[in-house]
Image 1 (cartoon, helix red, strand yellow):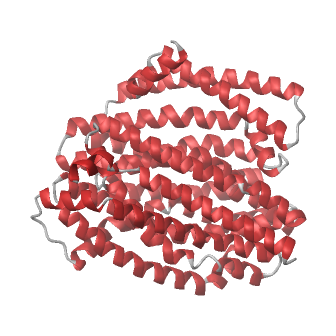
Image 2 (cartoon, helix red, strand yellow):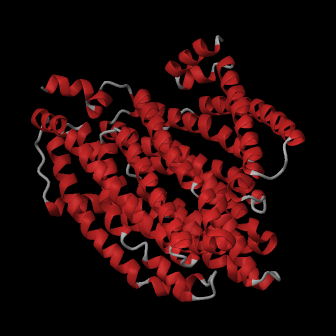
Image 3 (tube, helix red, strand yellow):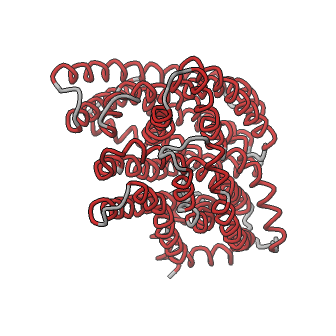
Length: 556
């Protein structure tokens, strides 16, 4: 029975792969899962906007206003523990202590369930305060903000244990199940959201505020369905887990108290770092209205609308490409942690270099591609191009913020949390400073410019720290970065030519013309990048097996 189980078991399959193959497979599955979930999470805006109708801008602003503190609560209440569990389980498994890793997981699941109850209660009862702090009231009634905020509280009950289950699978370097759970989560959430919005607006003839409340409550539905899927997958993997426990060393014993302190030691730094993006968004929320009110003649309504341009619209579209960064960084932590605790310095340096090359190979051309088609992407989802200029800024900023995440993941995989926290402090302090200056000068584009400036400043510090910790080969990495930039330039030239040709015979507005623009530009640009990377032997160095298949497919 066990032999058959090994043939079909996802966890056992990972063991047969090399470090690079594990990284590539993990990145591939997480990229698919994250990108599809982000696409689903972005596409919903098209039918949702049509259902809401003339109040869409206000509804979108109200929706975003609630999601910023909610995302921060998720980061604080959940992100640290799952990432800490991923690291701890990977570390224990590398030592053959499978029984200890299972005990750690079980005890942590109880802790996370309790934490979910506490997070949900605090979020619910602090909704008035959170609404007052933002200073933005799209409907002019604070009570509407509070209703939407409180509708998100039930999701915080489910998300902590659900996130922990994802961390458990990632600790075994099995990324397929977490990726599928993210797709299921988003699909269930968006399905409920659209069904209830249609019901509220067109059948019950309710207000757009009621529709927004149901749309935010959808987070609870998505998380619940995802949790059920993860529990089912865990049940399917029970034979493999039991076998590993029997064959492992099993010399460590971990109590509930040990579990709490082991995970707490790692989770606090992970919480702080994981909440970095949300903290930056929260800085935008705290500063944007106050600065714009004093240095512009914007009305309250226009402030709310322009706030949604960068905090909701641009962020949502950038997250599609940003999911690639998340995939690489998520696959980085267990690999780096395992090699570091095995004391394999040579492989650690190689893995660090490989991870950075893979990141640059994927994210740099994707970000430049998004920059080129940003106006059409924005029109496709939001009917106009009012925020297209902001999307361009965020697309470029994605390269810098993604590299920041890569460096941080590498350091945290080795347990060097003090460096990670110091870099976060530099990031947030510089973000606040640049935000005040750039919002005053550039209004709605200010937050995007501030992201680039603050992240660039932090990267100067991180580059040196990661090198000292891993001793990766900087000369070879810079060599490959140069080739990646050459391939990206070829891709960009091809994309601009196709995009310009499309502009010459397609109308500016309309979903179909902009979909055609984006699709044709992405196909030609992507193909040009693949061919260039194969001609310059770049793809062969980063993903040799996939490069061979592409050569046969393209007859190169």
